[in-house]
Image (cartoon, rainbow, N blue to C red; front, top):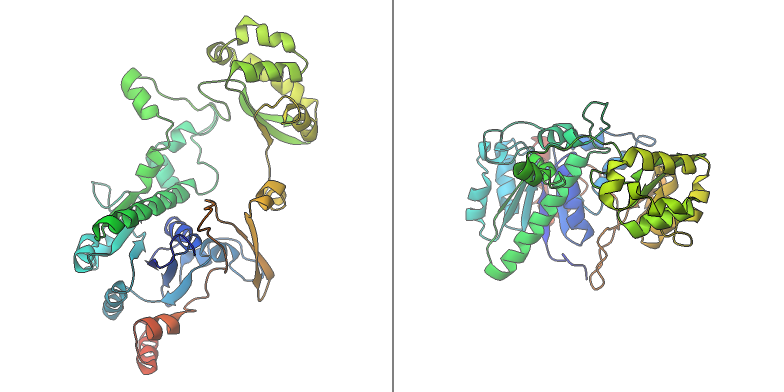
Length: 396
């Protein structure tokens, strides 16, 4: 049995943050019913490169889910939604703040109507506050949350974190909030509203700088791949690629110095202690960088890896290397599912490994409306003519 077996989620989310949140729940065993607009469906079906016309990113992001169509902007669609809520534990949505309320579906009202229901809302700026109704995308969340101000190199503009970090982090917080609400409900018997703001999520990742600034007045600078508290800590170019090396203690630095043929550096007063190395970070990084430049990536790993100096380090892998990486393979993070058109589809595996109730990835995302019959006839008990009429009217 999986950890969330018996939990049913009605998923109104679209594109990225919300679908990632509900994918985590589906990975852990929840039955997730994804709701899409009858015409076109989730924008995520079209926002990424496809393979032979197949929306592979959508299929990966919406793995393990069932799919129905429903137009919640339609009065009859909202009536169907209310009927479905009696059969689910969680309603998840990621419209702009206040959208559900504008449709007469305010989260607090839904929770009062269905006392055990959890309503999770993911939005750019949350459901409260002067910015709550503002639309947002990943880069907006990264800027508004302060993350871009500390990302990039000193002589470059503020930089967005690679990948849609603002969306994925909000999705993670959404899953955490839902799991916490489910745990609370198991004690109290009552659901609640969960409100996640992408700005809040990114603000929480600022490496404690809000606290440091409030206490000292200092502001963080952009330092690229380096660290504001230790050195050497950077990405270095080898003959055939890039590696990262991270040193946080004197012991590790001495091992590194010996491995690069400069054991005397470990006793050099300029580099003894994190504060001294940080003060001379340009010099210590140049010394390490010069050594790395004369090596291949494999030679660096041999010298510094577990069989060598045991210094924290790694190649900078591309996705072409990661899809065959032995560590990811060993941890079941590369799942290959059959696909009728492509033959197979590679999907990332389940991240949290539960020993007693492990999650699983067992099917790609659904076709548009794939499970309409199962849900509307099987779950709600509608007759086939009713379903056909709803389809003709554009409600489903």
